[in-house]
Length: 121
Image (tube, rainbow, N blue to C red; front, side):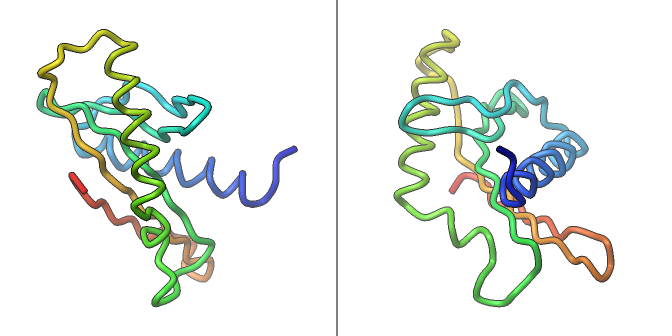
């Protein structure tokens, strides 16, 4: 069953992927899942593998920015899943990688989205 929240997530991940591609990132995988966690986008730029957590809100509201939901507990799951991804895809053990967060806030009145990219968190 697709809920409004799921649909919002799909749209936000699509927008985040396009945002990253326009900035020179190559998408390697989307929605990489393991029982303990998921990575929304796996991409690469300048030899560094980047694991991206996408967070979204229907509207912008001070104090309720979507990136605030990427807490230490969530990012620990992303980190664990990222380490498994690197092993499963047979990356060199010295492969550089990082965790990023892309925040998407929708502005219904303007029909636009505000995107923020937090690198190497």
